[in-house]
Image (cartoon, rainbow, N blue to C red):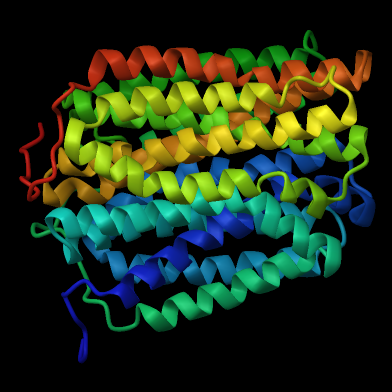
Length: 468
């Protein structure tokens, strides 16, 4: 296209970061505005919890397919498709007066994020090299982890002083600005175009498995844990999971390219990314509890996360420098431990108001240190160990782990919280719901220590590794 540039510029970085923010900052803002939306729309807490997790869930369901499509159709093209879908999803949410349009809009936002995330990572790899690539990935992480850390504050401020619908109005404006800044970035595709047909069988089996597991976690209490529907969902999920692996192992062209996982470093980055996002997602319970039990507004709750935002932004660049000096293993291990400790501090609901608020502020700050430190070593480990013609689908799998980890973190922690609120104290419910983060933190620490080598990645030009 006339005027396109293959040289990475700061303008392109800003455009890519804004695209990522449409999901991590604006779409994820529901984690802090559930009470306000419930009052306005008059829908149940269970329904809003589903709507909150649906965007991450559908992002995870479609992101691998979108990553593969971006390799073939073009990463720039799919980024613009994703931004357009975000605008449509936001419009549906803005005009919603009941659960139906809200849920449809959230689903479309999830598909939008599925298009944007792997495509923008691949655009970074094609436009930048060496230390410039690591710098660009750090800014990408500002949009991802930094946006996620800022969502409670920004979303809470907008919801409190302008109304929650304005969050999605701003998201539309950000999407349009991103399109403008990226209009001249050079299109990027895989050097060899695949002639293999898309694996629709694996795709639909995977969607069925994830949807059934999500329904079990989020609606099991409503359905009744021993009801025929819940038991049927559990049985169906298990059978479909086995069927998925049996069918996929026999195929050369798989929905999830399992040959990528022959690289231990890539496997470690993906699995730990899933678990790290599960830790972060328990913030939904903390935010909801602080508003309902301690009487804070959405904005006041968001103010408690200022330390988290600052820590994430600062530590992303620190994590980049740690990666260059000591490889990814140590910063990833330290980051996971620190993030879990910080999040667990918000579970001290037995403390009186003033002391509890101080502890929560400190906990969010400490959690932000861990999340920021983790970002660049993890994503750089994932993309550096993958050949150029696989980077789109590999990025899709990596970001699928982010979305599904966050979705299941929300689903599990809010389900535990909801069950315990119904039968007992809201304070006990919040404590246990937040401590669900340990279910993700412990295996994350074990997995990183087993799969990431101490000297796996250094600051050097990317060398594509043949995979499979």
